[in-house]
Image (cartoon, rainbow, N blue to C red; front, side, top):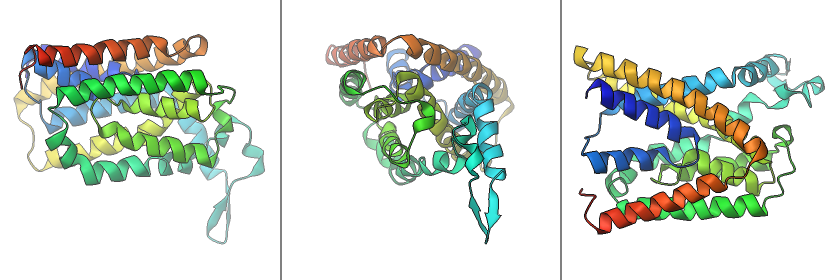
Length: 282
C-alpha cells in the first residue's frame, strides 16, 4: 500500500463514517473500481481509531460531562443513584445508557462478522439496493418524524430503538450514522439531536471495532513498510472525520437530509448499473 492509497482511504473513511452515505459501501466501491486489495486488519483498525479520535475531540465536553455525572453520583449500598441536580443539564446524558445502547451492535458484530464478510462484502447488487432502500427510509423518517425533541429529552426507549437499529449497520450500504439518524428521527428527535445521538452512540462501537482489530494485529506484528501508510491513514481519517462531524451538525440545524437521500439513490443505481454493464469485476 502506497502513501496515496492510505491518504485516499483514510479521507474516505473519515468522510463516509459520519455522513449518512455508508463508509463500507464506499470502501468497497473504490476496491471494485480501482482493483485495490483489502489493506488488512491493521489498516482497518487504524482508520477506526482515527475516526474515534475525531469523535472524542469534537464531543470532548459531552464526554467530560458524562464522566463527571457518573462520578458525581452518590454511592448507596454499593450502587449508584444519580443526583437530581444533574438534570436537565448536558451532563444528564448519562454514560451507561450510551454504552448499553451499543450492546446490540457489539453482539451482532461478534456473532455475524464472518458471515457478513463471506456473504455480503462482494455483492454489488446488495450494496446498491441497501444504499437506495435506506436512503428512502431516511427520507420517510425526515418527513414523518415530529422533530420536536432535543438531545436531552432522550428516554430509555430511544436508547433501545437506536441501539437496535445500529446493529443493522454491518450490512454494506446501510451506514451506521444513516440508520441511527433515521431511528432518531422516527423517535421524534430533531435533526441535529439525531446526529449528535448517532455520534455519541457510535463512539463505543468504533472503539470496540478498533481494539478488536488491533488484537488481531498484535499476534502478527507490523513491518516497517506499513508504519508510514498507517500514520497517513490515521491522520487523514481523523482530520476529515472531525471536519465532517462539524459539517453535518451545522448542516442539519437548518436543512433536511434530502441531499444525502438523493446521493444514496444515485450512487446505489450507479453501482447496480456499473455491475450490470461489466464495469465492476469481482
